[in-house]
Amino acid sequence: MKKLKTMTLGELKMQLAWLWTLSDDTEITFGTGDLSFNTAKTYQHAPDNKTPLGVQIRFNEVYKVVVDPHDD
Image 1 (cartoon, rainbow, N blue to C red):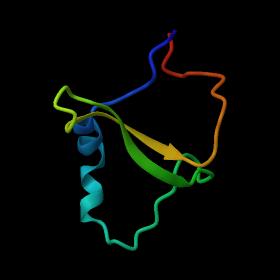
Image 2: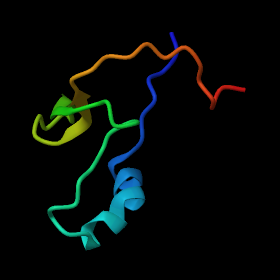
Image 3: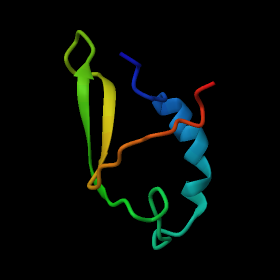
């Protein structure tokens, strides 16, 4: 089974750091504008059962990916 595509929170913060300079009323679209944000939740915890090791960001629409441009 192929591993799910993931990134670390540090990588996400680095990619989105420039957003913090924008006004709170700036509109955000997801994908090509046809996704809507649902929720974000933790799905795995460290042995201390307090520190999340994984976060899943959920959108309302479901897509079937047929081509992965990153696969060689």
